[in-house]
Amino acid sequence: MIKLFVADLDGCISFPFQSPDWEAFSKIRELNIQSKKEKGIPHLTICTGRPLPYVEAVAQMLDVGLPFIFESGGGLYDAKTNKLTWADAFNENTRKIIEDLKHWLRKDIITNYEGTIPEFAKQTDVGLINPDPAACKAMYDDIKDYVENRYDFFEIHYTDVSVNVILKDSNKGAGLLKLSELTGFSLDEIAYIGDGTNDIPALKKAHMPFAPLNARDETKNVATVIDDEATRAVLKAYQRIVEHNKSFSRAMKDGEQLD
Image (cartoon, rainbow, N blue to C red; front, side, top):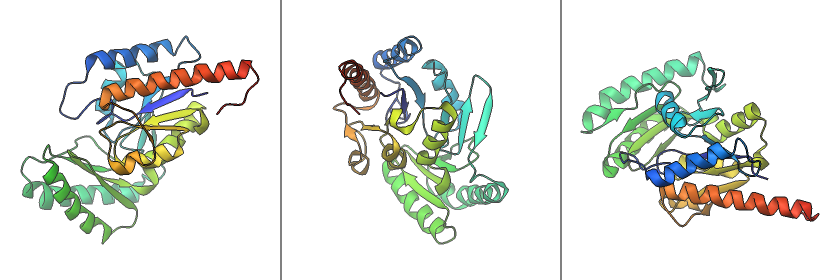
């Protein structure tokens, strides 16, 4: 039985720079609220590359009560206890290197790509935002070349609106493992939906991996593709999990075996 549903934000809960589909968003929230009373509905939480303040705001709107993952896997936050848990890979040495990298990006990348801003408030990784997909791909190429020639402990990802440099040992897969430890839900009890290449490590670990239609091809290759985009895809995946759990419960009553 799936007891926890983990959703990415950008490209899943909503498209970047767009208002969410509020009807679908509200239904996702309603299911999460029902999960507190109905055993067959999994709890909802978030795994995203976004910084803590933004994720906390969305988590409040969705009534998320469990810890959530921010900065890809760099940190987990539990609102109930107001506790932050940082990835082991984020230490004094990597902190200094990240700050140096931010300085280089401000000097040599941001100034060369009009419309680019840093993802403010990030601590464990470096993110840049630009609404132009072509600019993001060009920045990704420049940053990848610079970083890979100097460091072997970062991985670089890009989307149509962002470029992110994260610590390999604190990616979303590592974040999902830490979340499993903190919540007590095993990976066999976790479903995940994501659209980007940075979601792949988590999708490979979750028992039920999903991707929306708008996901990258590489991501679709490791997940069950939902026949819809972003918010509506998350809702459909959530509903599918609920139906899976109902089938699981019926099979258990009948003495059958079901994953």
